[in-house]
Amino acid sequence: MLYDALGAILRAAAETLYRDVRPHVDDERARTQLDAMAALASDVGAMWEGLFAGLERHDAILADALREDVDGDDPLARHHALVAALNARVAELQSAGTDEARAERARLRTAMAAAAEVEQAVVERVAAAPSLGPARRM
Image (cartoon, rainbow, N blue to C red):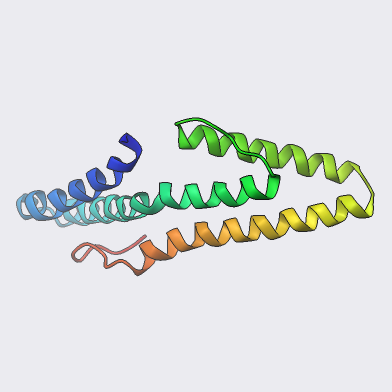
C-alpha cells in the first residue's frame, strides 16, 4: 500500500540528501538547511513507518468503545468515520443529563486515553530513534 511505502521513501530521501548531496554543498547556511530537511524527512519517515499500524490499533480501540465497526480499505477514511462517530456519540451523551450518559462518557474517555497512549508510542518511537548525521531534531 502506498501509505506504508511513504515512510521508507522519506527515510531513503533523507539518507540521499545527507550522504550524496551534502558533500557537494559548500555554503554553510545551505548545508545547515539541508541537514534540517534531511533530519525532518528522516523523522517523518521513521514516524510514518509505525503510523498506520498505530492508527489501526487506535481505531480498534475506538471501534470497540463505540461498539461499531467501519468497513473499507482506506485507513484514513475508516479513522475519519470512527472519529466522526465518536464526536456524534459524545455530543449525544452531553445533551443527556442522566447517570447512564455520564457513565458512558467516562467509559469513552477511558477508551480515548488508551487510544492516545497508542499515538504517544508512535511519537516516542521517533524520539528514541537516532538522528541522521549532525542534523538536530526540530
